[in-house]
Image (tube, rainbow over all chains, first blue to last red):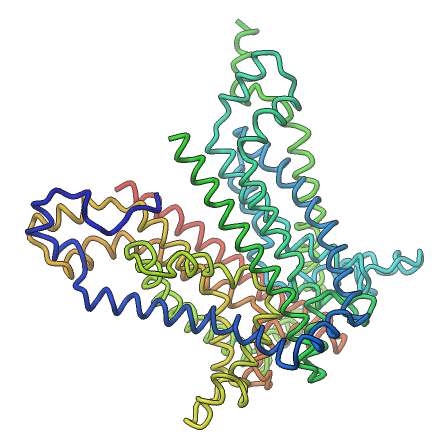
Length: 295
Length: 282
């Protein structure tokens, strides 16, 4: 599909000779567009990446290493990992369950359900954090009860996990639903007719069909979970070494004018983003291969 | 007869197993994680009198923050629409070295944590930064001004237009272009009369997505904005400021406005999607 390429070799020679000018832009226009694209993307994507890593390493590897091995930085990394380890499986399981019932069955209100599942992506991260403060905070709905039972959610780790679950909630479901819908249900029906059980059908038939889409959703979910800032910032108490995730640690270091350390810690997140992009590109390529093989 | 009716009814629901438990679990999660927490926003706002609510959402500082947020988001979305179409066009139609890498990098703003983007952009455009060093002697101040807000919004909205227009161009039937060429159209006529109209719904969808994202954005903006009340203070930051002053009611009222704007944009997007599907069928 991608190889919808510009060279007009598919077209009969007649066209090329007579109408090439009408099917392709003149060379100067082409060069201008390519130059514009390269310049724009360099300015907004490559330059920031370069600046980030050069700032992180501006005082040498020794400082870089020291900034990453600092106890507060390490505890922030631990908290970010814990958050992702809870959040990703939860949203993965939800995504699978939700896409099974929405993609394989028809029922009234289906498109409303899909819109509602997608809702957290349209809400400002700050608002997402705020709603959890209103539920679990001291003045919130459950505040008095939680306080009486000495349970701390807001300004503590559970609040961070909850806000992250909210923010990443649709990631897996929104990738799987269209994919499962496109697969249809004939294969599952065939498996059931042949005597397979429900779960067996799911694990042997459905799951292998959507595994790359699943991986794609998990990668996006993980990247978002580890990088979330706005929502987590509202519910975290910003306690160093206790309720700081890596992005919050970056903010604190930056606001203390400790730029080298801030960019060093940030560079870890940037590397994570680059790895996620690479994996994402790979799964997209895999899915295209499968589509081509199926077509 | 009755049995066959029952059977056909079952078939309508699908003879695949597991509808009831999966639907139950889905609704439960949706309620607990999304709907109940979001509804608290409205319940909390309902405890305010109308005067209190209007006082909170229409105070001069809040109104100024809407102007900054929506104004910058609109400009950023326009910028993204313009460059997004050029980028999508170039990536789909032309072959040049580095194309695949640039194509993959377009999603960087989705993957890069917003705080990281924020400090990086602030670093580049600060007076001693890579570009700030060049721009400031020319009298162009980007960091800690509304221009910085626009810039950060362009960054985070960058993938939307590219990624909505790209598939349309890829699946674009070149026969329409050939037909127009046979009818004697020149390149400019073909582009403006055949290609651009077909791209239009996708551009509009990408524009709306970029706008929606920019309006709610917080992390990448606060570092570069300067956050001066009345000048460069965005609405999400104002919510956080109110929270830090324990003004929960005020924060909630402004958040309700933001949420309603999100709902409206979501509605617009759904309508756009329906429209472009009909548009494509024509």
